[in-house]
Structures are given as structure tokens and as C-alpha cells.
Length: 181
Length: 181
DNA sequence: CTGATGTGAGACATAGGTGTCTCATTTGAG
DNA sequence: CTCAAATGAGACACCTATGTCTCACATCAG
Image 1 (tube, rainbow over the protein chains, first blue to last red):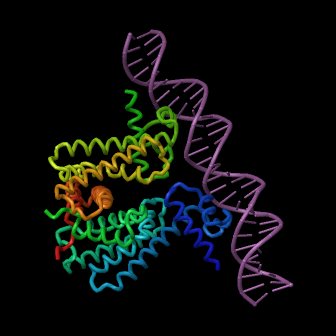
Image 2: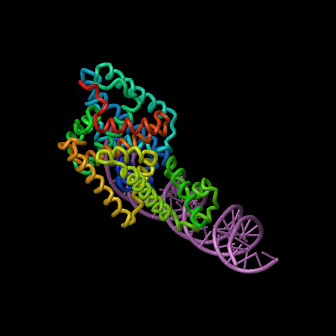
Image 3: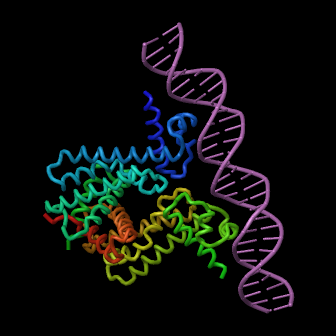
């Protein structure tokens, strides 16, 4: 397979850049168990690799969310299931957020599209009674992402299982962790 | 003042690295309105600058939190006021989290100390009834940070005032943004 | 005025990451 | 087996960030 090597390189790139954002292409190639020349055969340079990573991350997140959401009967439930499904990939989303060097116009458009889709789902959920109507949807989207990433960190540090983290994140988003007084 | 230039450089470093983590020291010096040689007179190199930034950020966050918390009568209130006070500086906290290249042992110790202090405050707040006792304190701390950063992003993108963002973040943490059904 | 300190500008050498190329070897399809 | 495609290893030149140094200038206290 031609794509197999490219995929291994992408996977290695996520792994390496995750804990060393300034890592070199040599590091990535080594992690992928691949010669540096081979890396350049698949990705012309750093920018192209980063762009490919962003596209990959976005596609994976979209896939996993849509798949999970497809089993839901309400928008609220779709958001809950989608959040749980995205947790293992949250670092990839986080990664591409902090990366201003990725400037593909198509990518920016896709980001914008997903953002609007999220806002739309949130507003549908509001009309279902799943979210408080007086809270700005932009904030709900923002805290959704924030808690999603927090959940990923809990899993990463082994302070929680994926399932526990998902429950905690959703509970926090919907009812908070206050004492109830 | 000797320190004035150093402070300007630090301030510029926060500003520049915030939206371009891979920025060069030349960029930082330019942003500070200072010659590149002058930057090296105050900070031997990139590492020392980064470490100084981390120390500065940590000190500022600690100061602003303690000052705000001093006016509170309960731990719960202290956390609420502290969160609000830290929002404008949240990017600095976020910055040093993602930076593995800062390896000062003293810094790591201080990070650990503050982390434990936060856990302690949360557990005191639990005993006051401010947080649900069945939720792991580690998660509360994690979501506290996550929502703090989310609030900062809302302010940065001008989707909310600092006060609005603080209210939203605290509300989300304690009671959530669910529809209440 | 005078001297000390801090600075800006620029030259300079260095190191490391990057991109390209070559060649021998391996892999896999036919 | 046979051949084409893919790869690993390494050499090579290039570029940029970096760190150091020098010198002229500005500021300011004495």
C-alpha cells in the first residue's frame, strides 16, 4: 500500500508533536520508523505535513462525531454521545487549534463550517430543553470544547477511564459540579 | 530603571508567543522595541527567557488569585473570585502548560505546590457544600482550569466582557448550562 | 563637563533543521 | 523468477535562528 507509510508518518507526527511541538522532521521520521527522505517523498515539507495533520484530525473528529450522533434521537443526546466519542481524539483537535501556521483556505472554511454546525446543534438542543436558552450558544460551544479537552487530560493522566471522563464532562456541562445549595 | 527593559521584553514575549509560538527572538526584540543584542543582555538565550516567562506567569497568577481570595469568607467564594481575577491572565497559564522546554526544577516544584493548593481549596469548598462531594477533586480542578481558559477565549474574541465570562464560567462549573429537565 | 551605564545597529561565525540528490537494497506484483 | 516501485542511508548545500562581539550614541548622575 502506498498510503500505509504516509499514514504511519501522520500517526508519528501526532504522537511526537503532542508532547514536543517544536520537534524536528527527523524526530517524526524516526518515530515513524522511516527514513527522513521517505518523509519528504510523502510530504514536501513541514507545512504540508502540518496541513495534512489538520485535515486528518478534522476528518476523524467529524467522522467520529457523526457516527456517534447518528444513534441519537435528539440533538441533546447527539451532543452527549458525540462528546464521549471525541474524547480520545481531543488532543488532535487541541493540536490544530494552537497551530497558526496552518493556513489552508479550504481548511479554514471547513473549520468554520464545523463551528456553525456545532452552534446549530446547540440551538436545536436548546429548543429541546437540553440547554438553558438564556446562555449564549457561543459559550456553550466554548465550554463544550474546554470540557472535552479536560476529559481527555483526565484520561491521559489516568485519573479516569474514558467512560468516567465522558460522564464527568457531560455532567459538568449540563448540571455542574456544585453542591446544589 | 534596569528592570524596565527586561519587563518590556517579557511583556513582548507573552504577546508575540501568544499568537506565534514559534516566533524568533528577533520578533520578540522588535515587539519590545529593543535591539536583539539588548535582549541577550537580559536573557542569555531562549531557554532563560522562557523560564523567566513561566516564573513571571506563575507569580502573577498566584498574586491575583491570593488577592482576590483574601476578600472571600469561604473557600467556595475564594474560588469564584479567584477564577474571575485570573481570567485576564489565563493565556499565560495556558502558555506555560504547553511548554515542555521549561524544565526548571524549582518551577516544577512550584507548579506542584499550586496544584495541591487548588485541590485543598476545592476539598474545603466541598465541606462547605460548595461542590458535590462525589465528584473527584482532580476533575473539579481540571474543569476549573478548562472553563477559566474558555472564559479567556470568550473575552479575547470579544464575545463577552470579563465580567460576563466570569459569571458564565462559574455558573457552568457549579450548576451547568443544561435546560434543567 | 565628564565618565559610567545602557543601548542600537550591525558584523560575524556557528549550529541545526531543511530540502534535494544519489545509490544500493528491499518489497511486492505479475 | 523478474522487474518496477518504494525505501533507507547517507552526502550535500542552503538557510535561518542564534549567540557573541564591537563600536558609536544617548542618557544621566556627579
